[in-house]
Amino acid sequence: MDNGGHGVDSNRAVRIGGNRAHFVTAFDIDVECITVKLKPVENDASLQETIVRFPSARMLNDWTDANEETQWPLDIIGFDCYPQLERWKFVLNCGTKEWMWESNWPTLEAPLGR
Image 1 (cartoon, rainbow, N blue to C red):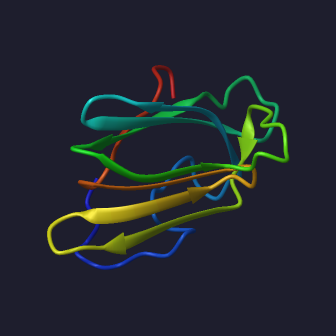
Image 2: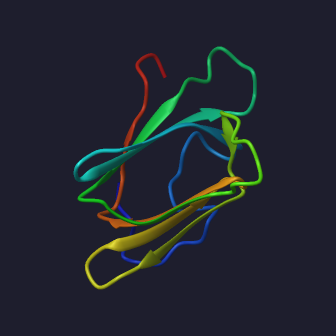
């Protein structure tokens, strides 16, 4: 995915399935990769989960609201990205959970049959 060399706001950080709201169904941290799985909010069997991979990732912050129970899937409250010197900083806010990391620009894996 090409970022066009420009900073982008939370609504345009990663284009996933057009102008649809999405749930976060999984957030996985690997040795050097963060994988986020997203599913459209609409209950439509033809709208499948999308996988977004953030390569060469380094976690900066992982916050959970200790006063609230985290229930999956998570609503996306905000998703922001900020250009760094050679990489990007991402902040994913899901209300009771918030992650902040830096990585290279992400890649999308659209499911088969889309």
